[in-house]
Image (cartoon, rainbow over all chains, first blue to last red; front, side):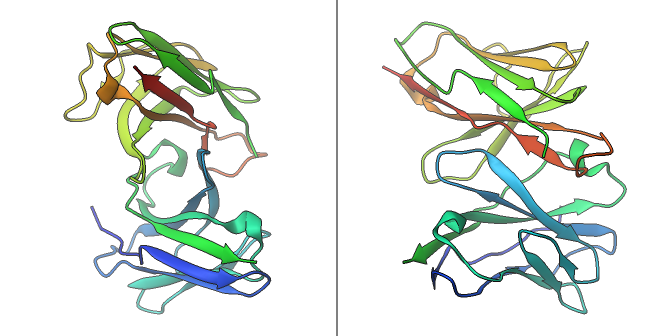
Length: 114
Length: 118
């Protein structure tokens, strides 16, 4: 399985943008890039996913490098409620995303400074 | 998004007793559910895949006789930790996928159950 590499931790000031990087140099052409986050003492929640083009939703934006070997999750205006561990996960496109077993790496622990 | 609940949210038990954790999909049906375990400061580790009407599939290294999984209906899966010991103390999380057109095709996670075995 293709692996992802993320920084262990990052800090950001409240109300500023946050860019969370993920490296996936061995990504295959059919792997989708998914992001989940886990708030303290809660189960993970879906954030966003994409294949090649940049994606936006109400929670975040996903910027995908042209060679797809890296991606960046962008929180446009971080709030204290965004403090969480963010996981970058690759899922083959041949799968029903929901039925695919998810392999969680160590993720990035994001701390928001008031 | 779709809602997955877990009960109880936390439980304390004595060593040697069994504990049952329920995972319910509240507004959709799930033929498959996943069970994860998370130790403090660590990532989630998949334990098993629960399949409605059939046996669960366990990940390598997970004792199926210790962690009993029953997926008796399309909205309920249970995980029973049998003869619990302190090393079983952990955060147990379930997830369920949904194909309902009103929801994102992804997995929805429960809030987790924290188990402490004394």
